[in-house]
Image (cartoon, rainbow, N blue to C red):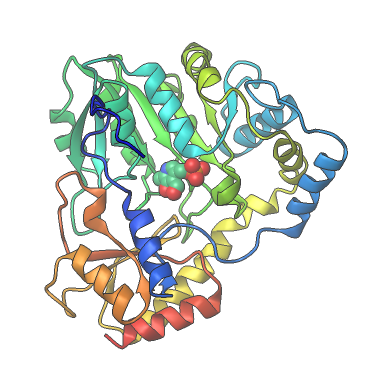
Length: 385
Ligand SMILES: Cc1ncc(COP(=O)(O)O)c(C=O)c1O
């Protein structure tokens, strides 16, 4: 193609290809076991596939209403009330969206203006900062304390000023596997009291929580819920990351703005999938048993890795296990992750990718949303290092 005169001014000049794409491509190239990107290598429930097929055959193949199929919104309202005693109005406070990433993006584009500051807590999921920049906002970075990856609320408080418009939290956390406690939430509640700060609470792993911990949704805390937007993802909950469907909960005055933006980004979500999930979600075990299901996988992987020289960090939720490799190598984490993908055939994600300045504590993230045999083969290879 002849090149168009270069008049393009990038909206995201610093953004390259995401680390997930890079590591998955490297995994494919070297036929490595992919514990990098966060998706299951096992099938979702065939019942769910059947329900989508049935919805298609019944002719539910045209646009859904912009905020989502009402019975699905009603089912989400009921679920949220049962779990967290929070009442969201399905008409005005719940919107079905094509996945968590889009819901985060639409929320930030709708609520953040030029020059607004948004506090993100690193290491963090990689879509937050580009979304803030696209909205003209300014990311401000808090850092979790290491080891242990706990939020330091005193440090975070020092970052708050009159320009702070939003704080983004994520529990259970990707990439650290840490969860926020109710005492954390009380500290956050105190910190934002009397300000006009909105909380964006990324709860896509809400059901993947272990060892008796209870998910502390912001919706459990009325004083936080009134200023919060919650993001959830059916991709994570029902093992269907490729279907890109999730939802957003927010008080009506915030949701009205989010919908104004969202309707011109996507308008509405794949209709048959919404019909299918409306039926499927009636089976509460499908999400209530998810913690136990993944805890077994976490424990299996952790026992297998005892014969390796990796030091596994505590993991209380999500499907990510972090591990320190300083007994194996002093290479930087990107180099080490690439080398072990090529040489021993296991792909992971270097944690420095989740920090804007690439902080490197020699930690890799392994996704354990995999079949037992996949975890066994991977652990055997990792133990050879
Ligand atoms: C913390 C976090 N938030 C949001 C998402 C996006 O979810 P979805 O696949 O539904 O867009 C992910 C996916 O990996 C995630 O890890």
